[in-house]
Image 1 (cartoon, one colour):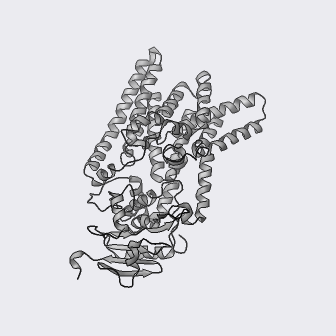
Image 2 (cartoon, rainbow, N blue to C red):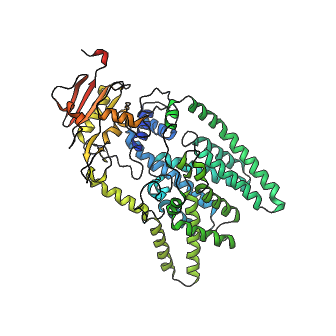
Image 3 (cartoon, rainbow, N blue to C red):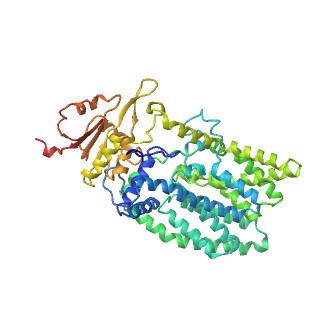
Length: 523
């Protein structure tokens, strides 16, 4: 915060989603271990979802830290957990230190060639441009993405170790990771089950005849142990979902398109070529990866991307691709380390070979570096240029947030009206929805309409409030902000005497809050 303003920058995470996540932390900060959707007013039973945010909320309450600050602390802590899981995987899969360092750097920073094909915008463009789940850099921008990726990849690497070493403790950890995913990203259980089954079958098929029975026993016994440990979590999660109107309402909204084949190829770009080089060299030499680790990473890379497309058409669309970037980046690191070793053995100076390898990594990271630069530069852009929410709340908006928290019941429904702006072509659009999106998260009050996915019947409700049609809308307070342009329907709110049914209760600079008088109480 600075001078009473909130710093709301959320990097590559989709604009309306960050306040929704903070609203869950806000509920946890009040001592609740179950959440309701503050972005819709339909009847709901509290449900245990997004456990990471509810636990961050409890930490917010215990340590007296703002939910918004705790959200950013979650970035650091859960992001570090993900990177620790990745380093653990590298330490058990790779035998070469240089390959480990190159693979880890690619995991952290690499993406595809979206920066070259960004002219083709929309859902057919490269997945590293628009899909948060596609690359590790984007998953680090949301705490629950980082945790879900760590749990998913952790479950798979522990299952691999359980089969390879026949250690039941790894199977138990895989089961616990899978169970925890039920309350964080339950769709990933489908992906884990499919990938683990494919790896188990292929590893048995590729095994020598004398060892095939023993390996088959390991796959089955450890797989059953994973299922047995995860099953109670699945049953509990199913019971939560079956009694939750929130889940049913959310399931009626689209979760996004299934990425087409070319967009996945572009989304990992040069990484595919380096990964192929790594697979080719290790299949012949096995210097960095043994045969089991190589098969495991290939299955994760191919099944985690291309097989998730047909599955995504049935289950949860694009989200199944979460974490697929990690094994691709590991194989790319192996390929790059192999090329580096060949260059050095061919009498290329070590420093020159390192500089070339660094340039390759930099090329692979261009999309993320460009995204980060654009996000930083956009902090100084006026809203009419970015056509997105502001990254800060103004002092009057901050004061209005504090007034709402102090003077309204926690059960009240507070609706902020979006401002109208002009774009470069002089067309009007609802450009400034900052207060509209953030009010529920920062006050803990429900709102009638604010989020295109989390609000049930969003388009219908949005049209109603922008025409001040409040009939049947369970709104207790209306927050109006003067903008450079206003809808004609907002004109009554600018009069000294408010329209019938509205009582002016707060005025500060360009913000006015009205209390909505129920029809039965009007004179």
